Length: 412
Ligand code: PLP
View 1 (tube, protein in one colour):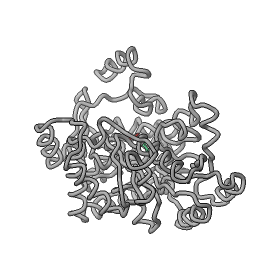
View 2 (tube, rainbow, N blue to C red):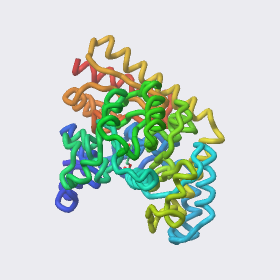
View 3 (cartoon, rainbow, N blue to C red):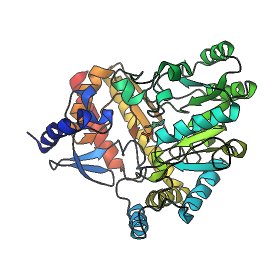
View 4 (tube, helix red, strand yellow):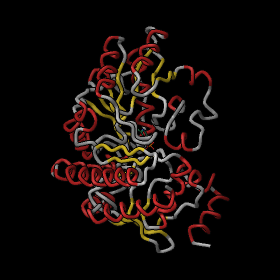
């Protein structure tokens, strides 16, 4: 028995499924989770002494890799001054300046996770418009708040329960579900729910059902439909924010949302989220307005220090984006040529530094296990993206392509 297997057996006695977030259980790839001891740059090291090239990157935030020295120093320096005050700090102002300058949102509120950011943005949209219903898209994941667990992607899709137990019918009724990239399905919902829809929430690149690129027409028409129907457009940029480029999906596609949600990437791995948008809308938030939203740990100084450092590095070094996008294209093209050579029915999607090889569940299980055995750590779910970071090297990508070729040869 490996150390990971032993720890997993013990964890299952004390933690549901042995994990603190479902996808980590490796259930959908019929494997035992690897217990991680430490990370360094592009690599993970497990409790059994194995080393992996990491393409999960804590599910996105570690765009500069594990243990980036500048981020680490900023965390230590902040922690030395105290880890939490529950009071206003200058670092929150610095973070708000950065976020508004980089993304074009006018005001922002810090929270502690992407889930919280989305939940709060939806409440603000309802408070502002005085309407109840929200349109989301099938397969898009927006965290685990009640109203967003209808036809959700990611872990919910992985475990075939996109609709969660424990969500009341009343809440589910206010969540309308349309199809991604299908404007007609949105138009129909507007027709059926006239003057009732507060907001459309969308992942500008759907990254929780594989990686699905939006058509520009789709995003632009969502903008128009929102304007015509007096409803708000919410971009959930938990994955795309500061990853598709420093201005996120809004800048990448040239479509301005009314509210935007951000998550883990602005904390560089510390627990963080944020939502923001137009000044008149954000003026609804307590203590100025009537929409209540709060958090003891929101704007936590250690998390702010980490996030400010990461965002500042990204802003000052645009070549980071060039590097990670080039690596991602090389990886995607390499995978494409392998599936072509072996005549495997599969799809490779990539945009920016996000990539996905969609093989279907059974073949992905074999692929995942083969890659893990070769020292490549992929998400234990077919529906997740590979995240390329600045710490990855051309050699890492080369090794990954070679390993993928060996794995795909076995399952072709
Ligand atoms: N929104 C999107 C697009 C996500 O991908 C995620 C999580 O990956 C969330 C929201 C929820 O974020 P968190 O897990 O920090 O609550």
